[in-house]
Image (cartoon, rainbow, N blue to C red):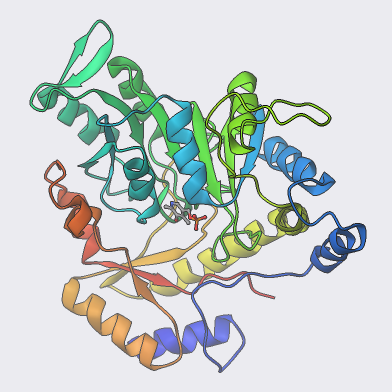
Length: 380
Ligand SMILES: *Cc1c(COP(=O)(O)O)cnc(C)c1O
């Protein structure tokens, strides 16, 4: 059975060589734009590609404003600062995520609380969030507090796992009911839509990543998405050392951050954005082929986009029968030239977060033992 899978992936990527999990593709204007940066000397913190890249992403996602960052992790850090998260606040998020979500929470000195995910999205469950809040939170003058720890619960950070959107309408409703800020970790979901609206645009701030393994890449990079133009402008200010514009004076009116993406990375981003639609339909085609192929197996299920969603299928995933089969799958494929990976180790099992509050995490634990990611690069 595993041999059939290995053969299928080799045939899908038309190669007998090693097939990596996800690699970037540079088939457009990347070299031309990079050369332009070098020829004009605009490789660093100023240049036209930064503005152009922000405009392209804002237009594509429907965000009022988009602001570049050096990477997705500091985009998340910035998002947290912008909605007013403070030291010792509690932040509701999922244990089934990449470490960056929780690292960003820790940079502020806030505490993650790990809530279960939904079976059909692999992302934060609004039902589980509401249940946890009903049992543990109280509102005092519209501010949400944890009855047991006394801490303020300030925000909720869902992550759209592998590009599959969480149940956003329901999550927005729970956040409104409890006065929580919604920050979307949309690092993996550029090109993913929920009921026709782009992920990352449902809360006050959304954060995207352009790391080398994401749907499109700037080498390293991130982007903040805003519906509130003024908050976006303030983000631009904070990510550029909070410098007050002046032709020669150095005046700074806040503790700022050097989080602005260099022009040379934005140049790559512009070239990649020009091919985004092409990449997305290519990835959808791969997902459809996997889906048809895995339909022949009784113990393996291909993970499909949730209802009412259009996923980018950034990283394809299958669910196997149990942990034993997951280990066999990983062993056989990695031994035979196909790179596969389990889902991340759960955040609440890491030493830094092992004493954080959690709910029962039933679905989270279920996924941990069953998910295998399979090669998903755009096919040339
Ligand atoms: C990739 C990723 C990030 C951000 O990563 P950077 O490498 O800092 O750009 C954040 N959260 C999740 C879930 C990710 O997958």
